[in-house]
Each structure stands twice: as structure tokens, then as C-alpha cells.
Image (cartoon, rainbow, N blue to C red):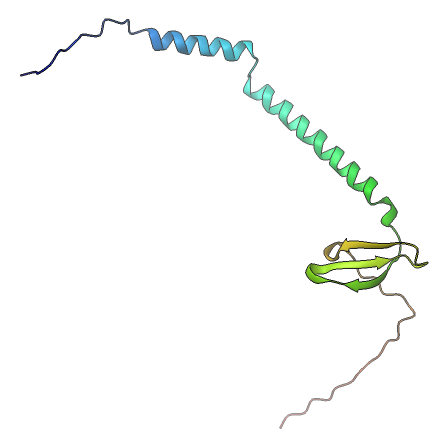
Length: 116
């Protein structure tokens, strides 16, 4: 027993197939070949990485050489200055490599341990 008005669907069943076919050709026309797109994307990523590395090297060319530590702040921010005292730079403390000069005094301490 059915209540209300029921209308049979008279549309053809191949409509979704036509949409899929149109979508396929749109993708084909726009050249969305997955392997080709993947290669192009990797190439662009490699080019961007190379440009980033070159920019990083160019930005830090003037930071070669020995520096003296002026002060250490919060979050490992270190102020360093050139040996002649011309420039004072703030740098990330994690990027610094400690290099001890030869003229530092070497102190040795001996500790004798005994069993009780």
C-alpha cells in the first residue's frame, strides 16, 4: 500500500558515464598526466631548494671567521662581535660552533678516590 504520488524516473542511465567521459577528456586536455606532473613538481621543488641554499650561502658569507661572544640572552640568542669590534651580530646559539684558541690556560685537577 503506497500513499502519495510516485513518478517513475524516465532519465537515461548513461548520464554519469557521459560526465565521466567529459571529465576524462578535460583532464587529458589540461595535461594532468600524473607521472609528468610528478616529475615537473619534483623539478620545481629541487629548483626552489637550490635557490634557498644559494640565498642562505649569500646571506651568511660575511659571517665567516672568529667571533667573540659578547652576551648570551634568553632562548640561546647570542650576540657576537668581530675581533676588531666593528660589528655586533645577534645569531642563533644552536648554529655556533665553539672554537677554543690555544692561548686558553689549561688547568688540570686531580681527584683521589678511596674506598671506605
